[in-house]
Image (cartoon, rainbow, N blue to C red; front, side):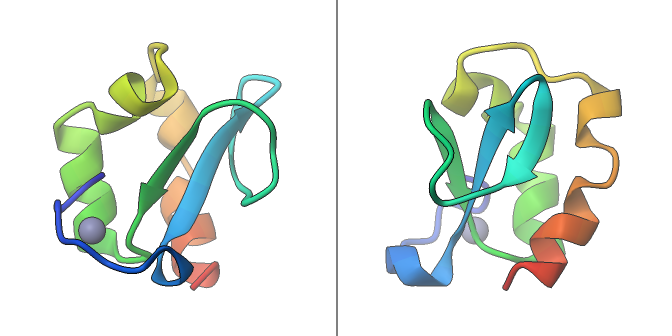
Length: 75
Ligand SMILES: [Zn+2]
């Protein structure tokens, strides 16, 4: 979703919106955004508003705070 590289799903992390909070979860219901567990990919996704598209909602900067820590720890 971020850098557009193709990777097998087991190398990606899934971000889901749970009660208005972005969380790393492979099992949370609803839409999910898959991306590489790298700062680069996360920044690319954020710059392109990829989360808005993938999750079909508007993600605010506040919701994105702390997400990179989760993503980088989740790999
Ligand atoms: Zn990527």
